[in-house]
Length: 130
Image 1: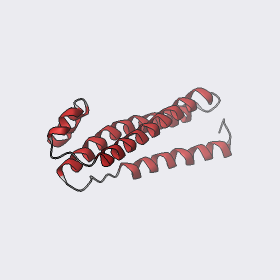
Image 2 (image 1 turned 60 degrees about the vertical axis):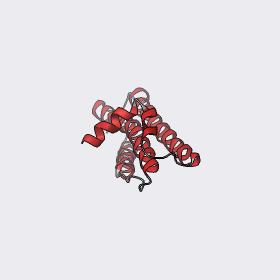
Image 3 (image 1 turned 90 degrees about the vertical axis):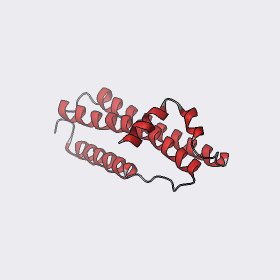
Image 4 (image 1 turned 120 degrees about the vertical axis):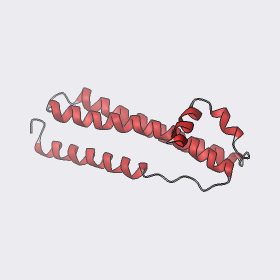
């Protein structure tokens, strides 16, 4: 828990990451940044999908529409937060010469997105009014 709090503090003071260990090869830091940006693009797509479900499917039952929209919006928010945390954790690990951190988040995100997709397939097959 203390390590998580320290990581959150580093989200807002990334220059402090430089105080930890030795500077890695810049190619690795840039690859870490590209991965961070890819996760942010994923988060933006999920958030956009959540808004699209809510705004462009008005004939869908309210409960289904709000449930699907909130699932996508929450996934997008978690994805954005995870991107920052993972960037800090990877940068610190590279500077310390440690193994890169592992995460279950990609599997969790995949399950949530697949679940939303299955529900949307059912909605399309059954019809808007169910």
